[in-house]
View 1 (cartoon, rainbow, N blue to C red):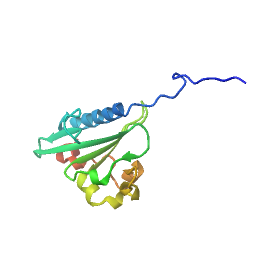
View 2: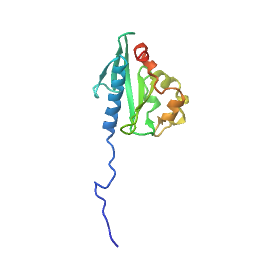
View 3: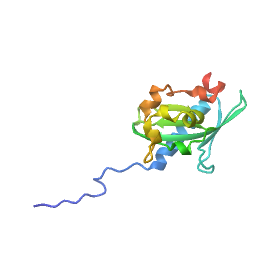
Length: 153
C-alpha cells in the first residue's frame, strides 16, 4: 500500500475574498466613471461604504455598497444590515475573458421589499440573494438607479 501526501501545490487554491471584493469595487468604479459620475473608492476608510459617487448633472451623491462574486453563487447580505439610503451593486466577475455582470438595487428596495428577493434573504443563517433572482426582478444593468448621468451613457 502506497501512501501519498497532498502538497499545497496539488490543492486547489482558494481565492482571497479581499481580492474579489476589491476587484468588484474597481469594476463598479470604472463603470460609474465611464457613465459620467465622479467616483471615489474608500478602500475601507468609510464603514459600510465602498464607493462614493457624485452625479454632476443632478447634483446627487451616492454611497455605494459593492458585493462581488467570482462565479455564480450567493451574494451574502443580511436584510437587517441594509441601509435604505445606499445603492447596492452586486457584481458577478466571472472568469477572465467573460463579461462582468452588474445588478444595481436601491437600498430602499432591498430594505422595504425584502420578500421579493426570496426567503433566503430573510434567512437567520447565511442570508443572501441569488443572481438569478436579481435578474428576474429586472435589476441587471439597472444603472438608472444612479440618475441621469448613468442612464444617458
